[in-house]
Length: 141
Length: 141
DNA sequence: GTATCTGCAAAACATTTGCAATTCT
DNA sequence: AGAATTGCAAATGTTTTGCAGATAC
Image (cartoon, rainbow over all chains, first blue to last red; front, top):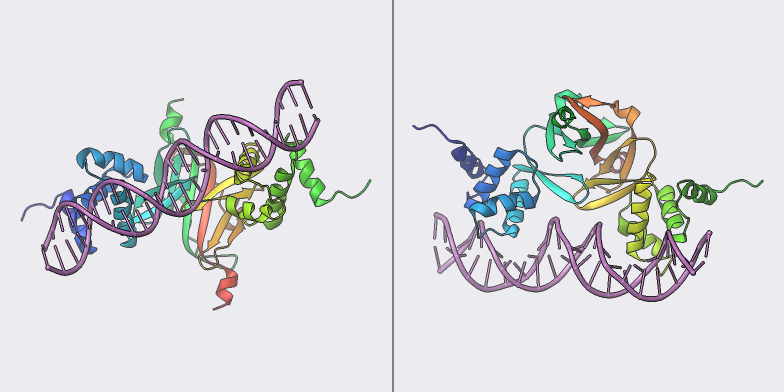
């Protein structure tokens, strides 16, 4: 039995979730897993368009919506009108560098934050966004 | 010397910031101070339109942009495409009730959260959003 | 009377919807 | 064939831009 490749893993993940693994879906999920860059619809579209010239932006919207419904992907809104997408792993915070624009994951352990209730309000979900200058950009000055 | 009314206060605040107090600007700032409801552009527009029938949505956009530049107002993006506006007071977190849709302020003291640095990245600003069921909605069940 | 400010109309984007063509089984 | 999927074109919704007329100092 041969070793399971990353591509196989992703394909099996889709099948396990009951989503048939079309090329568009496979490539979108591969993109999310390999870049881990919290992309916008356009970022995914521009990248995959090179491999799939007939690709439509509508399809990216369709695929992402399907992934969100299946719990594979999470929609995040960090700033303004740009909706971004994130593969679903354990909950984490985000750091956006205002200099280079990159968005980094910050494990929750590092922010010591796990409230279930505040001021009498029941908390289901917490989103934490940090804005500032990232390690790399600090180095360059 | 007569007592300064809330309207005067708001007018003087604008003047102090070097913003001439047009009716549209005064009413917009009054709206933000009296409702404290983190409104969208449309919410402000619909409300002020009643008092100022000639009002244009463009003007609300202009006014808010001016306020943001002057540091009077902060733009927040909680979910999806809805950009919301908040008068600038001391930093605080937000709680959005997924049942009634209301957004509440949560003082930072209550979340014990004031990081200046994380994982080597310099933090300038932190945004915290809680989602869940608010006190009032919990009571009704 | 010159600067600023307002608001209309059009443009620019992002996202959604309806539907016909394509693909998969 | 029948069901699901893709992708085009048009619709919708939000924000921005250009500009002419109104207003303020």
